[in-house]
View (cartoon, helix red, strand yellow):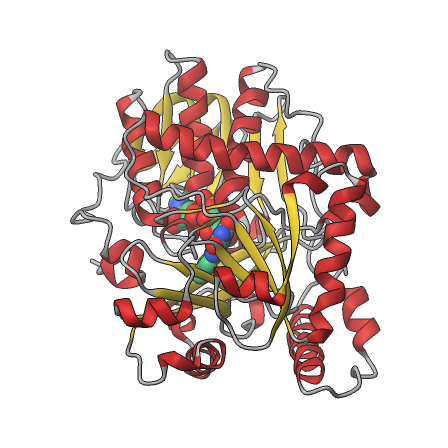
Length: 458
Ligand SMILES: Cc1cc2nc3c(=O)[nH]c(=O)nc-3n(C[C@H](O)[C@H](O)[C@H](O)COP(=O)(O)OP(=O)(O)OC[C@H]3O[C@@H](n4cnc5c(N)ncnc54)[C@H](O)[C@@H]3O)c2cc1C
């Protein structure tokens, strides 16, 4: 048996033994059968049972609830979407972009509301989101993001801060300004997913753990213990891990993200850094960084993870890629030199599911009775709530008001076949790092920057 506590600090700190629930041992029938006990599967189950309490809903999970990204993430419950506001406006027009961003904002509050209602101790803290411009070169990024929000009529929710105003919130080196919104929250990811699993059970849902789904078709999930037949719908909610099913191998790309965590800071260290508001903090780097102040007073610093592995492999060894862990630990000290000598207690990572067009997709085909929910590209904490509410509405034929959003009833193009996939993805990962490093060192942009940005959908 795996030691599930070892997969993240959050799982270790979930406040429970993580003992697996019993597996599925014989064939049976339900109304809705869901693959995957992460946020996506569980939010879908939760809203299905909320609106149709008599539905028979079962969730089938290979490991335990929260084993995947839902038990390992950076704890940002963000109003941001995987595609930027400018990108959404370009792709879908101003009205659809605005509706989607408003729905994202409402999802943050909905997560907090359900935690309160269901007594889920997810340490939900509405501290907002602070995007720092680290270096002069990052100022245009925050300014153009602010302009996009203004164009979409959301400017009143965002504030451009001067370097001094940013420093009043958090003291980080090389900051030239920041963009702030109060609309985001941070939370304890594992306590959310584990609490959500219990809320689903309290409403009559059944969760089978230690049960891999080896195949699926209209109205059925196939497992070693038997078939779970579903009269109304089968829901595929396995995010990055669905790429292991031959039928969905090219639907997403498993891209690793990695986190390093410090020991709890002393009161003196906190007084040097500030960060009293507990905002979710990032910069405009292409190679994303995300920071969270944990409820017990540590700095969580996340960034890219292990390089893409040929054939979309997902292996435990990739969770903690040594060179990346060291790079992240160096970044912590670059951002906060006053933490020199701090001890790093945990490092972990996991795969996020990246669609070819970066755009999540929620689908329900009433003909085949197959539904899927996937592709958050590392922005799934709040988006999965939105997606789960939308999907529950589609399955029960109930208007959720979300069916007009551009993630509904769509699918993304497939990723390239290998070895082309490996070549393109490794090239992009390297190119974005070179673009960031050149900007930070004050060098000219690499010659191929435009090509990389085009391929990366910027
Ligand atoms: C290191 C890291 C940091 C992140 N930080 C953030 C953040 O700060 N904010 C944010 O919004 N997002 C973040 N994300 C992304 C976010 O965590 C995910 O988008 C979200 O958790 C996805 O939820 P999910 O339920 O769709 O997938 P998962 O949580 O991955 O759940 C899928 C589940 O399906 C199960 N499964 C898969 N295949 C099968 C099968 N064949 N049979 C049975 N079970 C199966 C898996 O075991 C897993 O438990 C981060 C992700 C990582 C890895």
